[in-house]
Amino acid sequence: MNKTRGGSGRGRGGRGGGPGHRHRRARAAAGEGDIREARGQDTRAALLAAGRAAFTRRGFDGASVRDITWEAGANLGAVTYHFGSKRGLYVAVLVEYLTPLVDRVGRTAASPGTPQERLEAVVDAFFDYVAENPDIPRLMMQELAAGKVPPSELVALIRRNAGYVAGIVAEGASEGSMRPVHPFLGAVSIVSQLVFISIMSPLLREVGGLDITDPAVRVDVVRHVKASVREGLFCSREASA
Image (cartoon, rainbow, N blue to C red; front, side, top):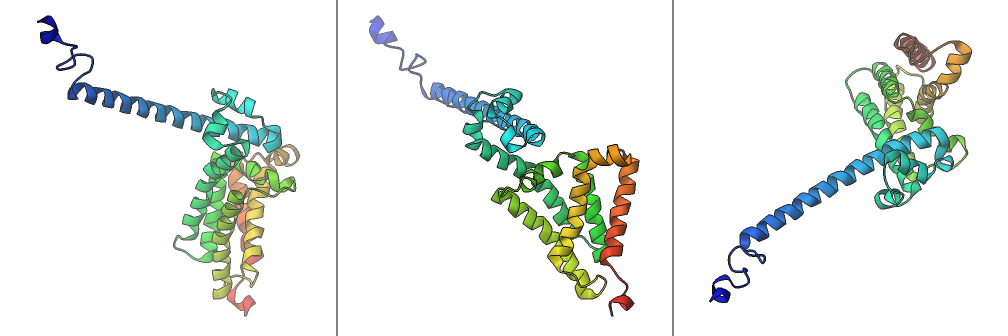
């Protein structure tokens, strides 16, 4: 009788569980999946931040996976798991932190205003972003300065950024407010000033006494760059006739 009444307990509330038990197990499994996903996202973000710092300080070749994972509080295989390789992490760092800058330049280039106003706004957008992320220009230019071929993802971002600026240059030349220069070279002449000044900030401080981390000094630097762009590329309609 006991066997008939209690059985194995699978009919009503025993270990085998009915529909309610199965639902609870499914919810628990889903909750564990969410936790694992959140932890994975946290680990990925920590690896990106640690990779950014290591690549900026030591370059790609000098940065070690062991140091990056230690700094991120992750196990040694985390870089391979999340990014495939150290190179994959390096590319992800470049994309993660340069895309917002390129997007900002794109929005600025598409904003209302004359070509001169928009180019000067691009100068502001670049220096504002670098003020928030002072390591970005150095990180972006390391492989180029070493004579290496940069990742295709970085090339695509640089091409897109230059395209935004070159579009303004072409428009200015077409309407006659800007000298008839090659649009891409005109864009390079503008962007190179921004990048070079940012990379040279330690030397500017030591040699020229200009600390561009000081907001007041940065205002003067931005004003200087805008003036060089204005005087080097723009002209009156009379002069361009």
